[in-house]
Image (cartoon, rainbow, N blue to C red; front, top):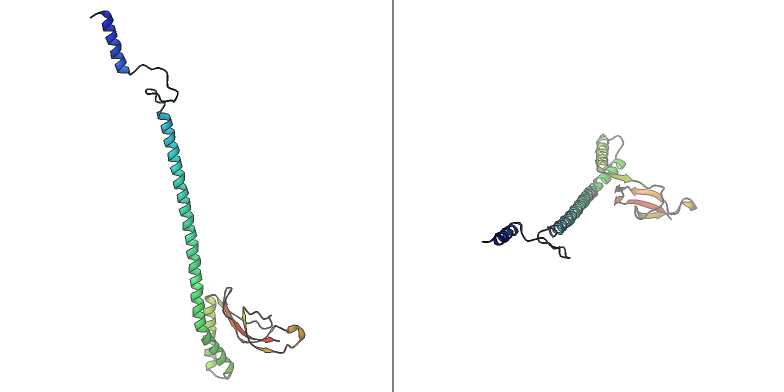
Amino acid sequence: MSDQDASAGREETIAAATGPASGPVPADGAGAATGTDERPVAQDADVDVAAQRDEYLALAQRTQADFENYKRRVSRDLQGARQRGGAELARELLPALDNLDRAIDHADQDDPLLTGVRLVREELVAALGRAGIVAFSPLGEQFDPTLHEAVATAPAPDPGASGTVLDVYQSGYRSGEVVIRPARVVVAA
């Protein structure tokens, strides 16, 4: 073997060990040995991860907002159910309260049972008050059909009193703004 042949064999061995000779990089940026195609792939992966992170964050925020809305709705529904339950109970108890009022009005003032009846009435009114149910008596107020039930009319004592409540037959009851029972009244004609 000549020196030229040995020299050529060594060059082939070196070239095989180090890879192909580096030449100009193609215009599209795809170089086999340069790693230029790895950088855009890594950037694309970062963009995909960031987009996915943003999507999950938005989903978590929507879920949290939905849960807060759910808690407010359940709280509002629970309070409404309590008010409706209290109103139903009051509607059932109001006739008994009216009967106690009639018994007090028609009893002899010397009757020893009158004190007991008054105490029972006071406790019943206090229990309704603790439940947020209060009585109202619109004597002298302007008649309002949403709060009052006119059971009779009477001549007005003076011309400016037309449409006012002259007498209250039965007190009205309400819970907050909800009228449980309208007041039964006599209205000036």
